[in-house]
Length: 73
Image (cartoon, rainbow, N blue to C red; front, side, top):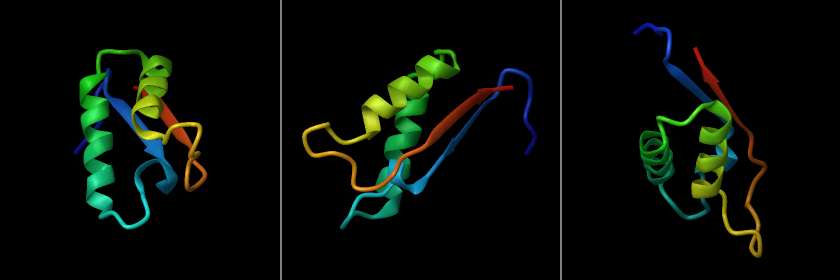
């Protein structure tokens, strides 16, 4: 599998997808759905949209540190 010009690379830490008491595949599915839904956005707006979709609401706060990098090749 190779990368082609225009491909998007998404790098993230476990805090973005893992939730206590939940199967990790649920978080991976959330991430895949979010990236697919917002795939036409540029890297910065895509990162903002993914964070908005996946990071818990501010009143509760995230359970873990979260880092996300989106690169358009």
